[in-house]
Image (cartoon, rainbow, N blue to C red; front, side, top):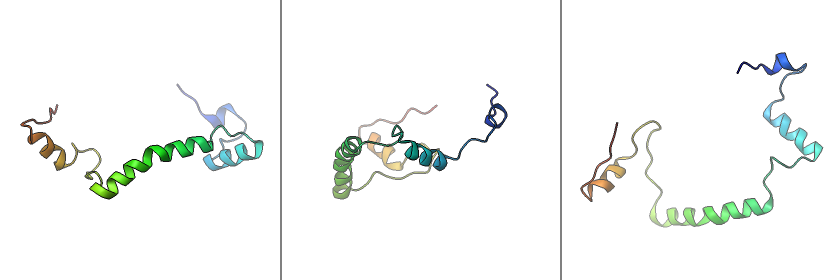
Length: 85
């Protein structure tokens, strides 16, 4: 698909925040989460954060790698290993 907003319309595409502010001014709440959605999100995430506070957070590793060494150690405890291409 070959599409250029500036060539198809007489004005340039609004920046993300410009669009957001315009939606607020127009009363369009489609891009805004409702209170119930926010509350449910925290109901799901709070137990995870509490677990991490008590037991530690997941091991960190650089993006694009095969994951942390702890993942290899976990499988090796059962005599297993990751299948890598």
